[in-house]
Length: 136
Image (cartoon, rainbow, N blue to C red; front, side, top):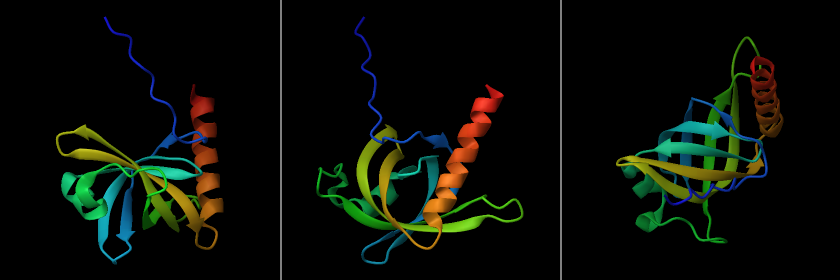
C-alpha cells in the first residue's frame, strides 16, 4: 500500500468551513456566483462548476506562480447578530483543483479589501475558530 502524501496548507492562516454564496467578478466584468468551501483571513476556497471555471480561468489550467488571475469577490459574513455585512475584496485566483466530475475548487488569495472588509473577515474567522475550540 502506497503512503498517502499529506496536502500542504497553501495558506498560512487557519481555515474555517463556511457555506455561503460568493460572487466572483472577472477583469472583463463577467459575474458568476459560486459557493464558499472555506475561508481564512487571507483567502477563500470556492466550489464551482466546470462552466464557471471556463469563464474564470482561460484554458482551464491552474494558474502558474506569478500569473495569477485577478478577480473581485463579494460575499456576506454574519459579524453583526442582527444582519450580515457585505465584504468586497480584490484577489487573485492562485489555485485550481478538480474534486469531482463537475466540481472544482479555486483558491483565491485576498489582495485588498474595501472598507472594513478585512476586519469583518478577521472577526468572523476568529469567532468560528473559538466556537470550534469550545465545542471540541
